[in-house]
Length: 482
Image (cartoon, rainbow, N blue to C red; front, side, top):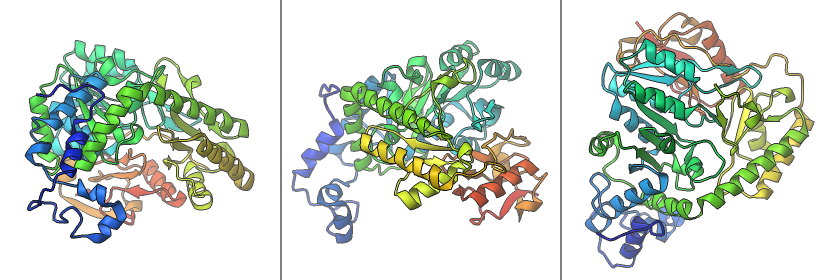
């Protein structure tokens, strides 16, 4: 087998060789290098559609890689400090679900914070595992959920010694990090695996003076969203594993749900982006940190906005903070975060990542420029000047502690009925409701609906949050257990 180094991109090179050949395609995809769909060529270009190909011997096979894809996996594992790595083309949702399904089966308990992405609870719907929630502390000023305190995790382990794993967000969408090293040590001492949702943590593996990465902390598996802060194409991700996980079994789990027709556009983007970060990641993320810190300082000088950072660290629920996350509290301007989000997009042509009840998040990554930061800062100053008002009546993004009555799987597949949201208080929900982004469920299958949850849903709708989850697309009715 060819010896590769981090200077190589095996999948990209194989595609480049293939592109130069005069292969007559009698395989899928049916557009046949774009000839069958001229509009697609006009949209994406000949070079792009020309390498939108199917698995073949020279290009390897994602389900059972033995050549260039396998080489790319080994290079990714080396670059990220993992025992092994898998190239994922179903987004980090697929990585997270594969991670949970690898360690959990029906009836198993898994300890996790409730402020997880919906993909985690979706995995519990699929496998039938039981969630043991560690309810995070809430910063009342900012209205955001914090990390898992070590004492909380320890109590959950004491109360549930039969749990098989602990899942940790590293970091949260807002940049909050738990004490991952101590959680890993604690969980392993009780025979439990540690899983890390690192959808927003690619840069932790390559930047300096940032929170610790999951693999360096000794976690058993990590789902890493390369397309978010790593520069690859949307929907591409890595699943990293440590030495305590059977790689062959993990691949079997992945192949239960991942496509057998992996996109070579996504695969090659992972390959190229891994090479770029391995060779230049330290410098790239130093620049990202510099941009984020510059933006934070400039926004805080405007007044009323609060772009928070490491000053929040308290050694427990906020053990560390990811300074690349430009999270900004907007409540003192008298505007909900989602309102600022809409104004920036509709009136200033600035698209930020999301806005919730009290905060916005501007995602700073390898593709940003200083002039873009300055445009954002200028727009925020103008939004304050034009729209500032009294903040009376604004809700914060306050965490609602769930009342779990049955497992997500039992609730999702149970006999159910559809009722108006206003009449649902006291019933057990059988579906999800969430604002997306960030995709953290307000209510999940198996949880009892309370007045506070109903109020939250109505307020989110009123403020214009993008809501998803229920069968009823108008978010006026909920499916509940009969």
